Amino acid sequence: MTASDQRQQNARLHREYDRVWGNWPGWGALAAVNHTSVGLRFIITGLLFFLIGGVMAMLMRTQLALPEQDIVGLELYSQLFTMHGTLMMFLFAIPVLEGVAMYLIPKMVGARDLPFPRLGAMGYFCY
Image (cartoon, rainbow, N blue to C red):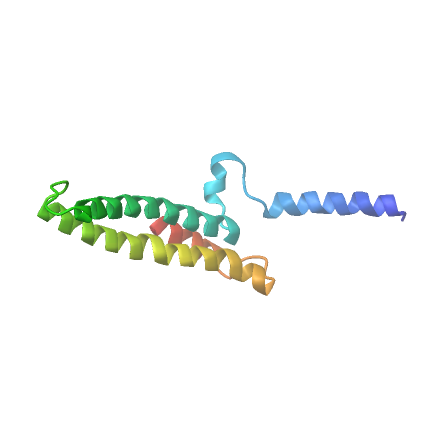
């Protein structure tokens, strides 16, 4: 076997590996259960919730910027404060940490995927 035959065989095996273990094209990517895709989904969704929580925080800070502002009422301020805290802890911080762990830990230990990849994907869809 020559070197060029070996390169062709390696390229063919690499394409076959990508076909078997890669993500499906289009909307099928949502059905992917590998740790990289699910981890990135957790991180991106968490960052979207971070933006929503940031808007809530800016509304609260705008209310407190000057004395006797009337941007939001007392009741709405309390609701914003509660929603901001809940959103940042349960919809941003914990899912992003889970996404980073899901993305990095299999790469750090040299594993091909998580032990129960469909369970991780189900966790995202429950989130």
